[in-house]
Amino acid sequence: MSTISLRVPEEELNILKRYAEFNNKSLSDIIRTTMLEKIEDDYDLKVFSEYDKEKTEGTLKTYSHEEVWKELGL
Image 1 (cartoon, rainbow, N blue to C red):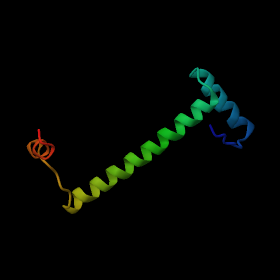
Image 2: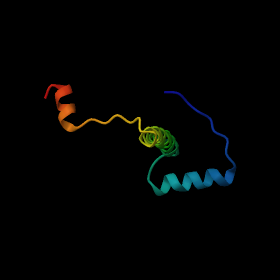
Image 3: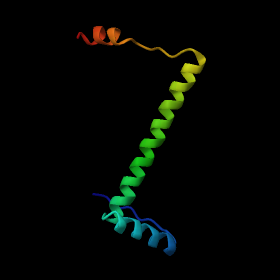
């Protein structure tokens, strides 16, 4: 497993530590989980933005459930 160093002001470190303690998790778990959730949220927003753009432009291709079942051979 790799290690990452992070420099934060003492006040922010105290906030992070209290938050981790409040959630009964290690500081590493809190930071790792928070970063991965942020990445997931950003990805979801990107996908939704692309969907919304295609929908607005009229280029969005949709499929009925019958078409999907046929494509999957169900």
